[in-house]
Image (cartoon, rainbow, N blue to C red):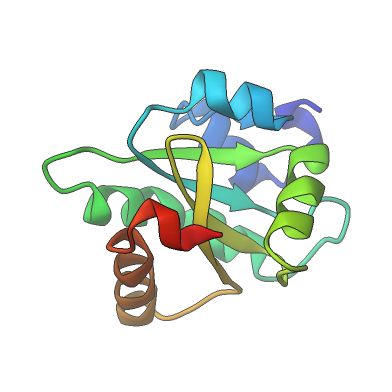
Length: 133
């Protein structure tokens, strides 16, 4: 999977923002920081109308939620997206998965308004890691 096969706004996350495109759980463990990350599942191959909207706001969400500990962003490739959907109970796509130390804490599907994104993602980020499974 290359950024050329992604929607232009999703590809921009990898090119302009430097977010890694992750194809596996092992790659995520190696390339994501030990702290928190927002991992975008863009609904590969589905052409979902909300995908570009979420791609456009993701860098702003990463910045708003960074706090003092920092926060990273990333994009899941098709195989990793499929695996995460299975691990998280078949979540709807597109989605943002909150990842801590390579492990998913929770997810938020579909486009939301700004305040709802912040409220719901903050709630996920404040969960203890043990509560994620």
